[in-house]
Amino acid sequence: SCDISHNRLSQPPSSLFSLTGLASLKLSHNALTLSGVTWPALSSLTRLTLLSMDHNQLEGPLPSHISALPSLKVLNLSHNQITELPHEITQITGLELLDVSDNALSGCLPAFMGGATALVELAADGNRLAALPGEL
Image 1 (cartoon, one colour):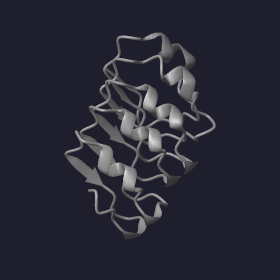
Image 2: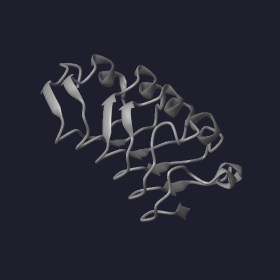
Image 3: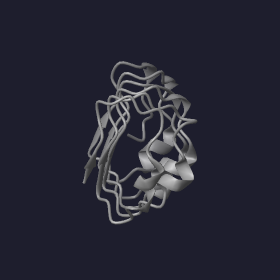
Image 4: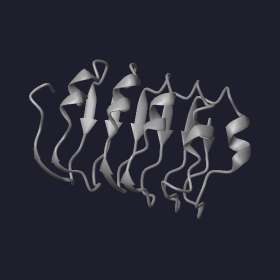
């Protein structure tokens, strides 16, 4: 477990990516940006079950590299400015909780979210969503 929340990090320390046995990574309340996160390096953390990146400065579409975390069960991306979820997020077959509340998602959540079969909780409040897909 690694908790480096409540700092001023603009990117995760590169030494973090060598901790391949890491199960929980909390990077909340920092100054992380989508371009500051080395997404391919993050995918080396294949045993990660919890990733918390809420309350950062993640702005724009979430990169598809997030799908390279096969063991992920909890993903908290709330309180950012994420505008789009990648289709590949459904490749995280064990994902049980996805929190994308208070972001910049608009329109309708993508229909492919219905393919996230293990999903028990989806928090998407505080966005600009007009509808939910019937598959949910």
